[in-house]
Amino acid sequence: MADRPVEPVTSAYYHARAARAGIPLDGTFELTARCNFDCRMCYVHGAAQTSDGELSAGQWIALAREARDAGLLYLLLTGGEPLVRSDFCEIYEATAQMGFLISVNTNGSLLTDAHYDLFDRYPPMRVNVSLYGADDDVYEYVTGRRQLDNVCGAIRRLRAMDVPVTVNFIANRVNAGQIEEILALADSLGAIVRPTAYIYPPLRAACHGEDCDLRPSARDAAAAHYRIQALRSGPQRMRAIADGLIRPDEEGCVDDRAPDGRMRCRAGKSAFWVTWDGRLLPCGMLTKPAVPLAPGGFAAAWERLKAETAAIRMPQNCVACPDYRHCQVCAAMCLCETGRFDETPPYMCAMTKEVLRLFRQGRDVS
Image (tube, helix red, strand yellow):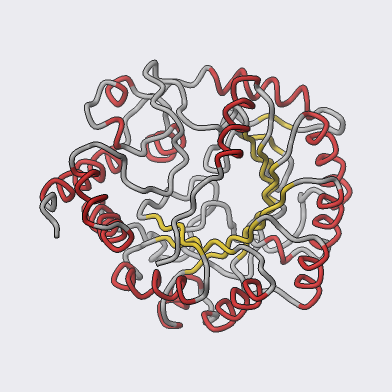
């Protein structure tokens, strides 16, 4: 398998310094909620397919300048599907010229020669491509589109240009039987894989169709997580995880243990998210705190967001739990699962306990 996505030491150092100083080093611009796919588990995609309410290219570019002056360095352009915007290239080129280290989230189906030429002139730090299945039948069930060959072709072309590609793979109840094939496919394409077995409830988007919940049970999600670890880790690492010496390789963004119940990640400390309609969030999985952005007001909005994020407290029974250091529980999970920051999400609790049981049961793996 391709190497795991490991954050460079310099990046971790910069983020730690920025978090202590309250500098918005890392930002996400959610350029649109529109998408040419219709994924059942999407956290943002709604039924509307118009650009009504979206920030204009000029507004995004002006916002980027304000954020740069406040300390922004790492910029992620995402959606929805950001390439549905006809002015994506305008936004990308303008922000690249400001000196940001830019990453792009995409489903990989809409890349054209114009995008490849743009990435050749202004190489992105990384392109993150979602991979939903190992065959077109599963792809169509999850996304509504038979696009696997097209997406794989896009990844190959990006890698031929030496553009780093990370494949985001979400194990769900339809594709969980293809974990080995999907990881092998990503590896054959020369992409680093970032897999997850946890699916956030789509708090920020309407659910599509009668069969919209692709989340497996907590027990099945734990089994998928364990399978991913087994495929990506050798026996020595698996034993170390089982013995509690190291944490499982996981897709979450937990940075520290925050024993007083504060948020454990960078959200609202050194990182932020701007929604397609101009609201400043700590991260894209949260609906609050949400600070409206006005022209010229980024710095003031960031200060308000930091203060409101700092007031959030995690459930005390989570903080006191002996499994806390192994658990991926975060404020966004609590809010999405229970509607509160200070209430334990039963799904994640059950998933963590089952993951640990599987690791301990397999301690003597050879």
